[in-house]
Length: 316
Image (cartoon, rainbow, N blue to C red; front, side, top):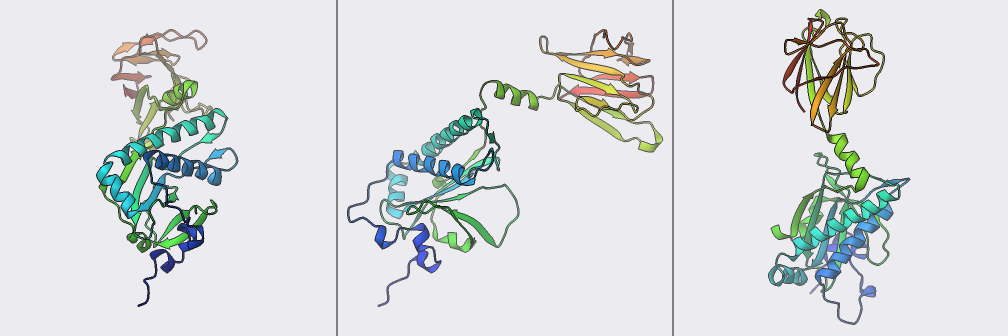
């Protein structure tokens, strides 16, 4: 009777992904432990950084398929239930530590996806003690191709091999709900860099205005105040900085307002350089641009510029 051809030989990847007969040891395979699996995942992450990074940019896999012998896999599911999830969680924590170290060296760490995906699977062609790996960048695209781009890192050579393979190939793997883990990418950046990231994501207020000018046909202009100090200016404004809210109207002076956030009390304050400014029906004293006088600017206020242009200010 003709022996059954293995799954890996049928798809032509026997020598790339599974150890051939020449690489099998006569001694019994070492039993897989939580620590050996954790170290294996961490090593594959570090390998992906070494193989994929270029210039000063750190690149790494976001999806990890870790493959086991069916009996080894079953043992973890029955006798060590819940350990896979703990291993994955600890692995990702260590990933972040490695990435933080690269950032301290001045490298650019920017993820290619917003999440991590781990698939711990089994396959009947694996021997006891075997462990394999497939990694993907997981760019987050919703596009579905006929072929799947898969990267193999064979244990024999450690050299990355990339192939276009049909998705049907992966139907030979078996995995259960406990073997699938999806975690958001949420790396904590340390020290001053962490404070910088928090500040860059902070929105202090939202300003909007509807233009009465005929050429804009009532178009609404919206501005998110992401800087602690901004300028509101008119059509003659020539600056193009991100802290300048330019309203393309001749009814707005250039500059007309300066708005700043005071971290001490968490409030907004306004100084007016324009001909006329009213906040909630109260006129604001006109200031010299070099000696601004500040008035509190409550959230949910209505600002009128020269009696024509109205600006609403809301919480960011």
